[in-house]
Length: 244
Image (cartoon, rainbow, N blue to C red; front, side, top):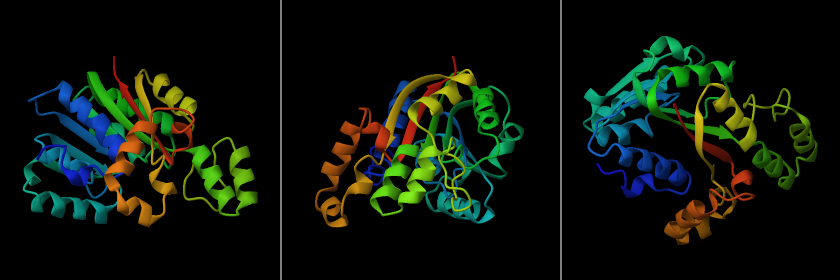
């Protein structure tokens, strides 16, 4: 399956898939070794396997991994998808150093005990020249969302908190801005190549507007994703980094 398939181009993930397509194009014709940390039911892993790559998914949820296994089998790529149950905090124990071409670490650094340790494990897993796709929650978006929905005290608390969270009422343990996320990756020795906003526009539109012209929504997402201040108020930030 080509990674231009329409089902991969929804507005909520279009920016991430665009970055992944660019990386895969650099390795035209090669089958890559991919590690998907926290990859769950295989929303990224299965399409990558369908495109000919070998993907190992590490996730703490046995139910998610069972769904991943079924999904891979239904897609005819069970031989290219490996499911491992485990916590992202222990990622270093699941992969050999310098053995992976591409690591996906999506919505993981928001919730782990030790984000610096996880990023160090991601960097160690990559071969020289290998790439990491990292997706984190945006602090700015969370503050704005709470403010416009009338949760003013929560917005103020989240804004003041160094980790960008609301104590005792938050399922996310930390949120980032572009500088703090990039600093985390650079501290592990990775070169940050691109930073984009994800869901800059998609989460703001009424369903009727989004459904009327989904292609236009995707195009606007892609156009706004790299440009501050639009990038910085996106629901998530996507960082693409490379091991030197």
